[in-house]
Amino acid sequence: QVQLQESGPGLVKPSETLSLTCTVSGGSISSTSYYWGWIRQPPGKGLEWIGTLYYSGSTSYSASTFYNPSLKSRVTISVDTSKNQVSLKLNSVTAADTAVYYCATPGDYIDYWGQGTLVTVSS
Amino acid sequence: EIVLTQSPATLSLSPGERATLSCRASQSVSRFLAWYQQKPGQAPRLLIYDASYRATGTPARFSGSGSGTDFTLTISSLEPEDFAVYYCQQRGNWPLTFGGGTKVEIK
Image 1 (cartoon, rainbow over the protein chains, first blue to last red):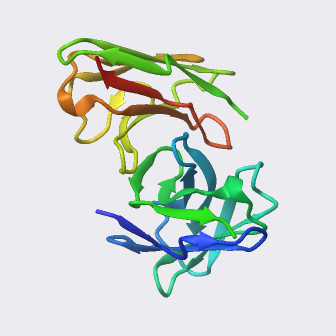
Image 2: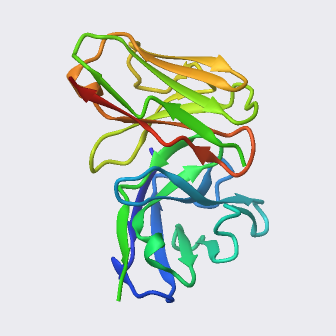
């Protein structure tokens, strides 16, 4: 059973970079069985897919990423296979980026979700 | 980008009643649609995938139907734990998109 745990600052200043880490347990981040990524939900609003990383290859590190076009210019999702972690960086944040950020497995459907972490953008 | 429109926004029903939720896609997603349930303070939970298949642990009172652009989630007889927000999600095309949600509340 895959478990996901988000961590990172709960408060980020406008124009700075939001950085979150998700620690994966119960499964290997380098497994080709899962997609890894992030979804967010502004307070009281709906869900928005941010991006997905798919790791492939058993002999060399090779990952493909897919990003929401509305965020693509500001987003980077990466993995650290040695720590079994997936990370999110979102640049140049504004108040509109205030949301609960979920680490998840957004390949086709989303079987696994972290508990979510609230990130507030405010000075 | 495929836009998913859910209706109604809010459904007020009593326990034991039947709930019918709708999700309409701006273009065909074949049967590549899922439904999620979200309770306050919790992450969403996958209920239905590929339009009509129940995910592991989903009670039989939940059923999904539809294809192309029109989909329905039916809860045959509402239990107290079913009052929540429900989202549809398509995987027919990137980017993955979600509907705006339907809140099922106690009447």
